[in-house]
Length: 366
Image (cartoon, rainbow, N blue to C red; front, side):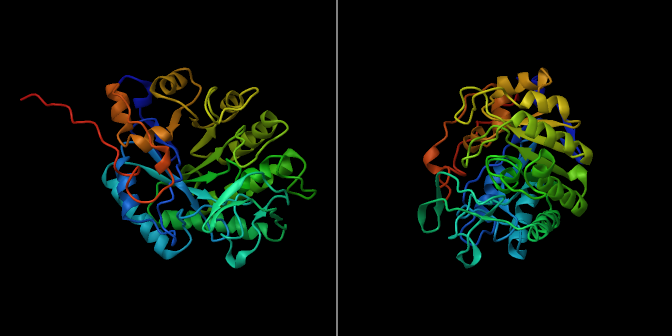
């Protein structure tokens, strides 16, 4: 399997990657209530540094952005220093790592918000479902539609988080515009019913994404910035009346920024996140001018085939990296994979986090 396209080097903007096997962003909830990256997290990322690129778990850009217990932030000096220890150890292993910038928007709860206020969104539309708050599982609440006057401040939170990520030693940042979080809530018409410059037309619904992208690349540079989209993912009660049109427009607009990459989460048929109807990824592949990364149920064979068939340039793997810290080596040797334990995905401590076994080293000739 070492001749698989997955093991070809590739350049993403300013980053030279040793292979095309990407560790997808994976929320694990191990940062504690202070949201400061810690030594256990450093061990976890160090173990997985053989990925061509690590995309960190989604990371809050501000206190307002939070919507998940014990997930890390990038808005305080202590958080920056915590992440710096992680980037240092990944780089010492020869790895590359980018930070995913996160604002949960309506997928939050007053229990997370400073002062216990309502979370914000594009529109005051309550999502179906529940959220795990520090006080236990609770239904989502109806968010407050963010005002036009507030939007520039949130955009600047993304920019400051980018500067903080640069200070922490990351190789780049990924703008999280997927999975029903704030930017996605502006993009899709199932969650955006605004009547102003940020709603209605495709141009208006894409405006917030583009303003964030402009601010982030101004804070760093476009060759250090990627964007993640999820055209058909229904997670967090998301929908769009015409995802091909919506995300084709957004992708064409993003072409104007010469980004390091575009990351598309669209699960393969049969995957738990797979959606009915026509796949959107092939349209975006034809439209995007730079490197395209795909994610959603791929294995070594289907991932290699996707690159060989020019459906993508890189493949991101999520759950396989949870259970297999040495995933690239397992793919190379065509070795069996460890079985993941879903009960520990969002628990605390080392169990199911840093205790999955590595392959035995190959014997060397004497």
